[in-house]
Image 1 (cartoon, helix red, strand yellow):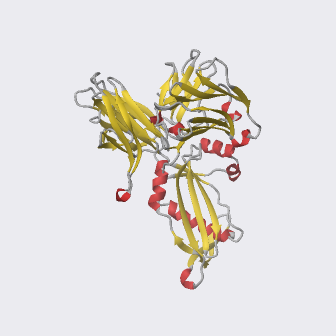
Image 2 (cartoon, helix red, strand yellow):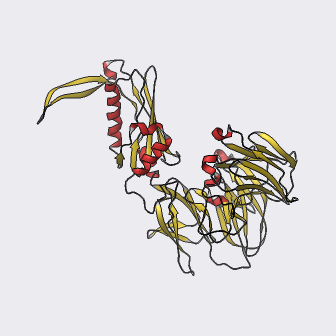
Image 3 (cartoon, one colour):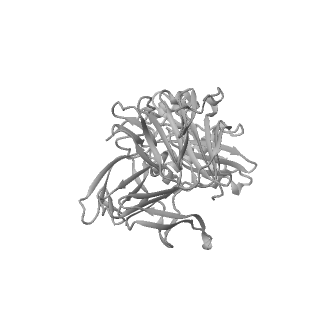
Length: 490
């Protein structure tokens, strides 16, 4: 089950009991002398003493290089990096801290603190300094004196810091099943009935048990990566004359109503549905009954099938959302890793496409945007990103130096091939599809330039796929980023 990652040392078989933390050096304004900076350091040190962790030091010069910092963090198996910035105002100093993942710079948490400059004796604090003389065999105290120092204006909330630190050891897990009566257990304790969303769970290899009355308990094993979201679905053998439904949104939390009755929230799963057409509403509920209907449509349930629909109305970070994707490919192919879409193979694959298809999503005015990998990250292989519409598909196939535009149905020829500009090596390789049902048009852009325009098919649902070829296999992360943004949604 356990598979090490060449690019992410935090993919572990088991996690740490205490988080391993390294603190970045803070650059102070010129007005802050060494004594005052030492005082600030001691004050924050007292705060961190309230938090259980293992501290390690990273050489100062390593913090100025991302590669050197990652190398040092890997050597010391660091869970969390703490970065601090200080700014000075007329009344004092403001400190802003970010708690980051050492591998991908994702933020576990942030907090602020401030000190007030002393204006009168009532607004100042005292700091006792002891001066020592050290000889070859002893240390002698010479004197002790007090210095006027700033006082706290706003102390950080320790509970916020502790929660952020805790995230560096845990991931989140969405757990669902084809039956809402399924009870879930972890380490012998019940987590409740499915569906369960954003369950905080320790990193490493974990076992989840599913229990349903009348069925033999099932234990599933999965790998949790701290700070990342994973998904687990248990499908029970059901009456094949009935159907099921899976409804998700990005972000989650939309209210789901079927035939006028509220049934739950996204992500939503329901089995044992009588085949037929159901009226579906997805609603964003607000305060004072100020709710917004985000989608109205029909949900067509068929026997022994799962009716699926997605509304990624603000779908950022789609590559890391396993709920949004369905894998496709040979038996030796794996589409998912701890960080989302991460292609891997256990054996040589046959010629053809392997990857993942999205759930069908709502066809409204939207932009599908993303970035292909830079040459240093892409290395070898080919990646195809395809926008699927009823009876038509438009896609991009990217290699290390070129990207080609293709469509289906076609005569077997590419529409055009483009070479990346040198500047793209610094800013990334952006692409975007813009679908406008009002104009009945579909537009494709590369690097901000319109390269294709055509008619937008009507009806049905849309989907997107990210694929690689068995004979030109692209390992690990296929894209730098992918998001879907619907127009007019809050």
